[in-house]
Length: 425
Image (cartoon, rainbow, N blue to C red; front, top):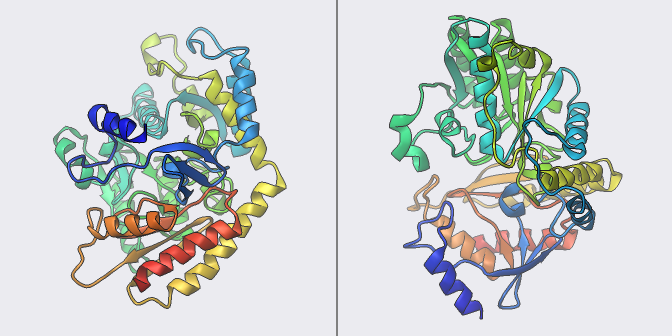
């Protein structure tokens, strides 16, 4: 049966971020519970990357499942223009309350990419509606904000975006802020902002995820955003990956004094169970769209905007974040990672170990091996980890862990042992 399914998969399915000609056969997952995935051949695998960073509470969470089932008995989905429903309203209120001032309005979409698209459209049209000619966009080199065209435009050029670059809009990129270059980068930012042509700064706060979990300082982020505020540049924080406890706080911006104008949320928003994106804006942003002219509205939407089942899952997930046990688990993982980092530091081919919250990352540098996103060592690492009951997906030669918060000490120990074993083999 499993062979038939895998053959059908090969015949009919086009997998994401996968070179089908050279890729190994995918795992056929039959069930999932907690931090584990169970395959058709009877093996189990620890989900060390939370199924593309989304499954924060673990698989099959009963509370989230019950919330979805209960919601299905009332409303599964309803058009979100000219209509509304209780679950979406409650979620919007909950999110605005959690974020605090100055946030006040929530725009619903489907995923992280669309949350970013909406944010960019808000920022660009904000200035147009006010009759001001600000058109430039500033982003960080190496950023990843999604795979739709607007999101790709403000992300890293090259790699998987190269075939489309001729269609991207122009963006001013700042170098990634390694510590000895921070002042130089801030000077460039000031020059850009001082032109009064910059509409918006978009940034992943403190961690650039798909760039390889690159981490930078709170001081740099605060200084950059202070400059943006000084020149009235709007600020978008892309917290699609960094929110929902990943950095050790509910939102990454809570490590700082910065409050952006727009924040993008997705991934762990629903506990990783259903797709949902939110773009949350300040009242000032919202009021810039209030005119008698209908053309000055934000004319954007998605078929599944405000989906009731996704909203129910998100509300249940948020309730879990209000429980002490969730934060105790996050704290436990952080401490375990810190101890593991000390072990990694003894290995000569492990470089640039870094950690923030439940995320730990490092580079594998072996003489004669290529580096970067297309590094061939990725396949070797994946194969070794699967043989030891761990599923992870390195970013080239960058290995990172961001497990579900329900992962046990024993399961974490298995992951650590498997990684250390790779360097002994």
